[in-house]
Image (cartoon, rainbow, N blue to C red; front, side, top):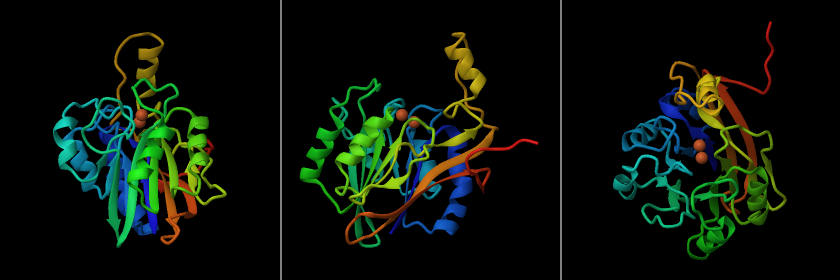
Length: 268
Ligand SMILES: [Fe+2]
Ligand SMILES: [Fe+2]
């Protein structure tokens, strides 16, 4: 089985980027299931019902969230009525929606879970390892993809090593910067510290760089998304042995304006 995981979709340009490139990714990788993080899809903050529907209409099968899960309060009104939107498992004091959902993919159970880390995260969350261990006691499939939404690479690695051989893959989200460390641990669990983002390029984690400098350094204006910028899509492709539920291969990719785009650049 092959699963694609796309990084945090930032703004409408992020949705447009996914919409543009997903047909190509389907042709190239022939995935059985597509997961995307949607916590920044609505103007960088949260996920409106309308944007949820737009992402699903692109051909995404399941959407995960993160610290921005509640930036659009309307999520309270629709999260329980849709089958494929997953909010962080370990939120304290929020019980709408689900933190883990099992999907039927070609007759196999595929579980997707969204967990938040604690380090440098402002939301009130319970310990991610404790919360995830408790989840496994009650709901557990052999194929299990974890979106680990966290700031710290070491916290993400610790979670990965802790659950090596227990889950299929631990995919880091939230920093919006794709890391160059996709690999398979000794027990067969694949890992990447951060899968990256889908949205405007160039940008400062999805926002127009000068607007972020003005806001943060000079305390003026608003951070904005350049909806006319180039479109970048970052993701990973994961191949899974259905019997063991473990990863047989993982590779990260980036597509800029519909073309595969590596690391580095030269200018003439
Ligand atoms: Fe994000
Ligand atoms: Fe985030």
